Image (cartoon, rainbow, N blue to C red; front, side, top):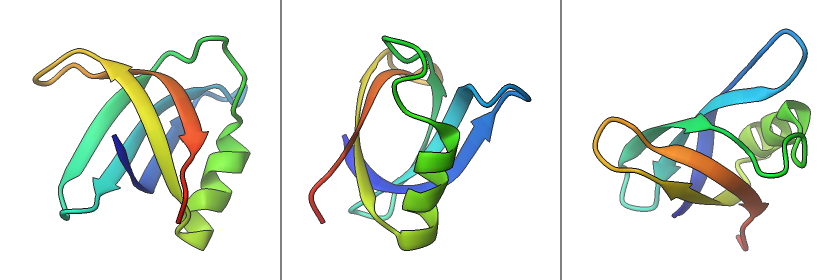
Length: 77
């Protein structure tokens, strides 16, 4: 799934815990984040995506209220 980040939740140590993504059709999707490997993307990097409105692509598992992101990549504009 691809879209523009609207929020990045991080622990005090900087590990990403959650994200909110706005999809191309205007939908808003909230995710829990469990990156594999951990720390491959920083919260700071994702906050730059928010500021610059650069899209990301997320790979996730789950359905309904529980969606867990295990990979976040830069997406083409």
